[in-house]
Image (cartoon, rainbow, N blue to C red; front, side, top):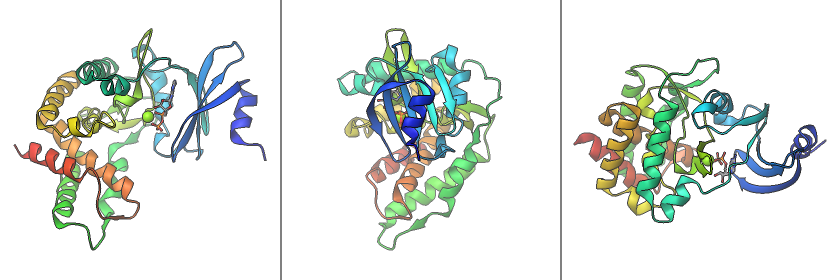
Length: 277
Ligand SMILES: Nc1ncnc2c1ncn2[C@@H]1O[C@H](COP(=O)(O)OP(=O)(O)O)[C@@H](O)[C@H]1O
Ligand SMILES: [Mg+2]
């Protein structure tokens, strides 16, 4: 049987593959196209692409608004332009978080300045959250953490049943999914969800990656809530609620069965305190 990587290299006439990232769901290879230009080949382990099934069709619809250009798109593989430059996460980690997050907010506003034609089948937010509602806690899960998780699940249910409009959502818009190229910032790695626009930058409250202390500063969270809610034209209270709900969802995804402890338990607690203010 042909290796899936070799199959797509041959089919799309790609050469010199270099592995640049590998996760549970996918591998990303930098490759050279027949015309000599670099491209990124994302190879998924599953042909339904796990939770990114509709991401590339949404990126296509958003191409003129700052999304990466999709060159080929088939079953378990996506070929897109190679984005040369630092990510917004790199910029933040190099000491310029305010500049990075301002660009993130701006590009979110640009993606969402008008609704896109919904010819892509996107995954409704309730389908994304549903599995969390039947989560299990381990006997030694600390009671405070368990209480916070239950509270966040309750918030999530309330948010899901009170969504004002259903918008096409990137679903994972954070600084490491935006690269600053010479032609401007480019967004990639979309999940392709459908739901409340207040969800769109909720996950960004858990980022930039690796900046654990900054992410947990109350003043930073409040600044981001103001910045992001204004960029998306949504209520900052609702955005804070989605942030807590998404933090709980990420904890659930990582738990792999039973929830016991998690490095973001403190962040979840802080976000819930801010929701209650
Ligand atoms: N089009 C691209 N151009 C350059 N680098 C890319 C591109 N797509 C992905 N990458 C690199 O691969 C990494 C992982 O890809 P991504 O699609 O974000 O997958 P994941 O779901 O694992 O976050 C990115 O953080 C980035 O460093
Ligand atoms: Mg990513």
